[in-house]
Length: 107
Length: 121
Image (tube, one colour):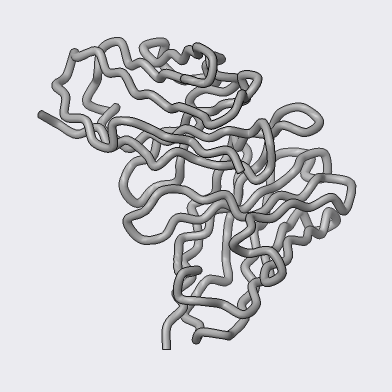
């Protein structure tokens, strides 16, 4: 199985901050990586797929990139609505696997 | 509007069975693979199972293989998860999700609100 190591597990930030979340895969993913946002008590919401493609309707302050087996989610200027937990997911190979999640909270 | 509505969750004893359902609307259901993803209390997301749209092709997480069965009724736009030999560690919110992507690689673009399954004596 492909292991997804996501860091940090918690991140404290302020409105306006640039936020970076990283996921490292144990094998190559051929860019088949998605990012989801989840708020407490709610279902996950797709933000990015194919490592860097923004889902329709997602604000442009979100972006994704990859370098080898390391994938990065960047929020360029954190907004109040962005305080949430973020999950990465590889969908290159079954079984699909998620990272452990990163909770972004208010500093 | 694409909508997914899960139902059938509840409290079940260890070793028991439960079938949860997900009713879909707003898209050509049989054209899309559907997945189940669960989240144990305070934990991350865990992919459980996927079934392709028009075939019987299915995939399962190792943790549920042999105990859970995914199925779908394309005439009813519904996907099911039959869960047998339930364990305490199966306690979770179970989300239904619509897949999108290529032939073999799918991500989940729409999620239901989830249904809670609690396994306890």
